[in-house]
Each structure stands twice: as structure tokens, then as C-alpha cells.
Length: 204
Ligand SMILES: [Zn+2]
Image (cartoon, rainbow, N blue to C red; front, side, top):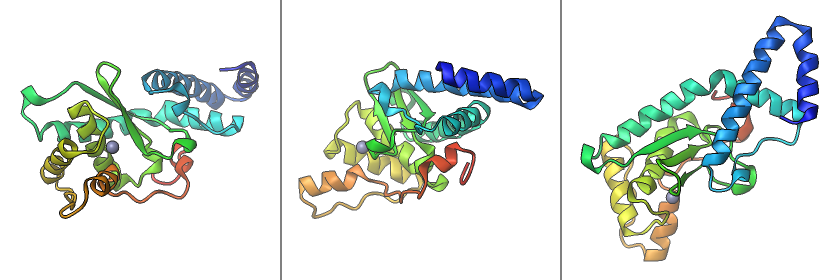
């Protein structure tokens, strides 16, 4: 938290009891995002708006609401695990976090941390698509690779069948075309305003 944020918050804190609760939530949300930056491939992959009021609002929302969101993602992770025998399962952690808009991705898997970390921008997805994106990243985490070639196809097919998702249809496709197709499988339409979720708005 920088000096400006602290000043803004201190002013707010003196105003009301509610403000104090809010400050605790902001601190908690800020700490959470710091942890997410450590789990990201590059720390600037986790990013919020430049607008300080918006950042505080989002940190406060995260501080108050991130646990049930992560619990839901954890259930989807368990559903993916259940598609494999216990001895085949890799150690994987999963979290929701707002990803920098410039990345243009909904989620990613950091294979360089232990356990492997899946970070999902829940705000960039419609809620019914969360399982699909968890399954995609799980396939990377399970294989320990970032590519979308043959092994990935077999794994995502297996997961889709196990989870009741539509399996990828790649018959007759050239290798390169198949890879591009699989990069976005299962297909998930984007949401109009990814930060709305993190502000406590739509879909949250
Ligand atoms: Zn992928």
C-alpha cells in the first residue's frame, strides 16, 4: 500500500465503523494480491486499474469475498482430480485473481512453482465456464507442459469426457490448426467488462 492509499484509507477510517471494517478488507485483499503476484509467472500479470478508488474497491471486495470463490474453484480442481487415479494426481493449487488486461488470457498455469499454481481470472469468464477453464489449465498442470500438442489433446479429451464437457473435435485437422483450436478449448465466450466481477458487480 503506498502513502496515498494509506492517507485515503486513514481518512476513511475516521468516518465510520463501517470504514474500519472496509480497511481490514482492503488490507486483506492487498495481501492476497501480493501472494498472487508471487505465484504468477511475472508479477505484473496480476494488475488492477490505475484508478485508486477503483483499486481500493476491488481490494476490499477481494478481502471480503475471495474465499468462497476459491472454494468453488477448488471443487472444480477436485472434480478434475477425480478423473485420474490418486497416484496419477499432481499437487496443484488454484486461485482466482484479476489478470492484467494486456495479457488477453483468462487463466494460466505456473509450472515453475511448487505445487504447480493455476490462476484464473474469474471476472473474465461467465460463471458456468469456470469448470471448463479449470479443466484446460488442469491438463497443463497434470502434464507439466505449456503446449497444446498430442498429449494435451488426449488429456483434455479425457477430462472433458469425465466432467461432462464437450470434448474437442479435431478430426482431419492439421497439427498446427489443431494446436490453435486446442489453445481455446473448451471455448468460453468473453465477458464485456472483466473488472465488473471484481468490483462486486455482475456474476460475482
Ligand atoms: Zn492452454
